[in-house]
Image (cartoon, rainbow, N blue to C red; front, side, top):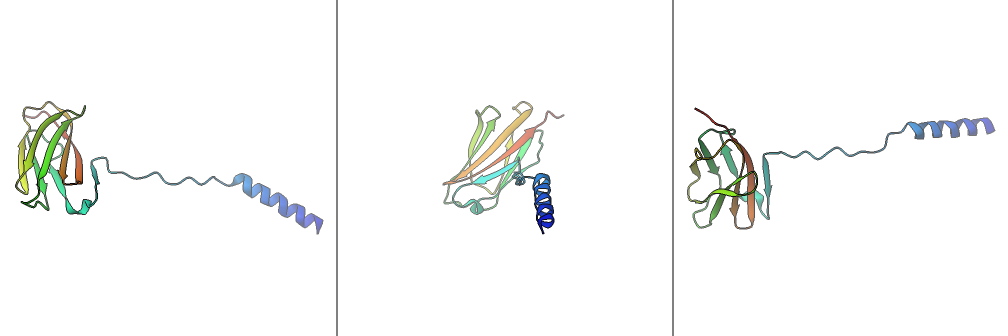
Length: 124
């Protein structure tokens, strides 16, 4: 019986030594699409094409004429390079004057916000 207890104890120690610590899986985030606010489902923003060369199309699914939808395009260092108020579901922005690089499109409706990162390429 003593041998059995010793053997069981050694097996338990060996199993404990080989056990891997628990590591949760890393969080998966979409680098291009962050929505936050009280009611993020009330606002949907499609920005295309991405990457773009001259014109960027903004499509807001639930645009209500009685609510202001503020749109800003920010440079990578945070400066506002363009801002407007959306009045149509689909808006085309001419960004020909901007240099190549990353930009952030930020749409705000009340306390709900939607942000998307886009890349502008130099084109023909």
